[in-house]
Image (tube, rainbow, N blue to C red; front, side):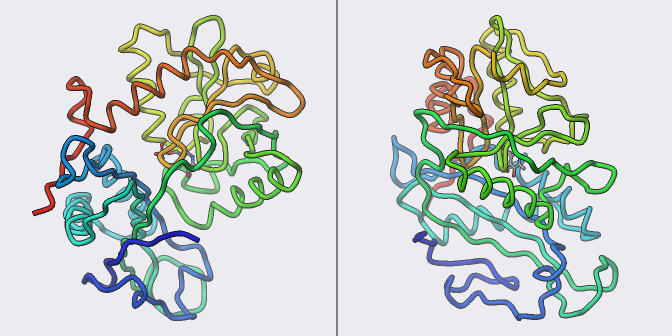
Length: 304
Ligand SMILES: Cc1ncc(COP(=O)(O)O)c(C=O)c1O
């Protein structure tokens, strides 16, 4: 059972999490007309009176862009301020995850985005490791990622996650930890809530933005870190069979961080993962604000 943070931001105010309730007729519940964000925070290991958030500005920007797809004007700086206030109000003392949601809050029948009230809420929960950092076993999903021509894939629109849910359950019920989805072109796309990378011959390779992926913030961080470490980075379409013979495969996302893959379908991958391990260690140090070079990625929030 998840442990939720004490206060939620709901209908323009902070109230106890248990009191933040929606009507059964809420439009977003029926039509998937909502979009969410997700970011991690930790108490500063060097100072328990501070909270560290990772890449808050970029998360707020992406959520603001997602809101735009829902025909709702929600400026990134407004989200930013509410999240800072949310953290100060909750004073979390464990590593945690913040879930902001913009949603069609109006009560009404008929899928649409016009003439329907929108709202914004934030809640949080304590969160440790989401997937085993020692390695996961993936299945190639029988479900395909949606296409950008029929879905705004650059937004985290809730309705899209039925595909992730189908793929994840299919994977878990058939003995795997996670699913890797292909795109409609039959190329490797991403996992159910994570972007994918492979290492071949010392190069890091990941599908580009034109491959129907989510514009992941961890993906962006990994690409920057890899370049800074002098590793060649290539964004290009990936065939399924390349994954089976890759030197390393890993998934990355806010919740999962960097999760190495030890098996895909019935193909075993090497237990030696020098690049994924290096990137994971680097990312962990950065999120703990221990790497001055990437201080801009970390928001330090004092708990007055
Ligand atoms: C479908 C999907 N792909 C990729 C990601 C990884 O994105 P990020 O690194 O921004 O968390 C997520 C998680 O938000 C996701 O839901």
